[in-house]
Image 1 (cartoon, rainbow, N blue to C red):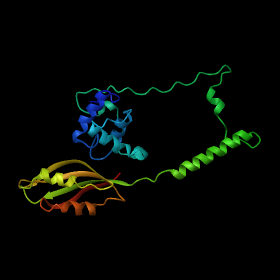
Image 2 (image 1 turned 30 degrees about the vertical axis):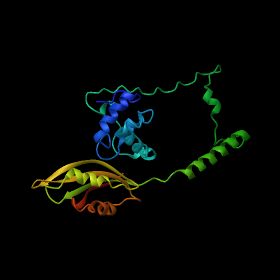
Image 3 (image 1 turned 90 degrees about the horizontal axis):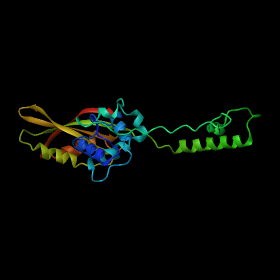
Image 4 (image 1 turned 90 degrees about the vertical axis):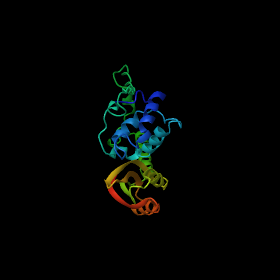
Length: 235
């Protein structure tokens, strides 16, 4: 498994094909699998790779909270289509500067004890300490608020076995709301030849709720009999 070299156009082409019928690397919600692949890409896919670019921009929106996404990050070779080996080069760590003639590293010159005694603290050290404290306070005050999101799995039921399920799904996906992203879908048999549409989505809690989703979906009354929430998980 793998994508080849994700830092090359060929590797991104493999990724685009893999995402043609998927919203995420694994499952119905963003996870550490998406983070692992995202971190291996050096630049956004081109606009011609629409599936890869759509996925890239979506996962990019989770960068502030990517550490809290579910799952465990695995090697790149455990993701992607079968039959393609991973060859993405990992970045090499920067070399540590050589010691100076007196045996001390250059980094030692920059080390400042911000909590030393008043007798030992020079005027320059005090100035640097105050500047760093002010910089930290400014960054903390500008830190964006965490956006609460949820993963929802919906069951959309048709009237009978003669309902055009492809048209039903097309209607559902035409619903576009700020804070709504549609995911993967499948048809699930319910009996007597009738199948329901099971479709996933990710919503921003402050912008989109299940009530508005039900209202918009059941508005397609020629195709939809009812809508139920099959699963609801906070991200």
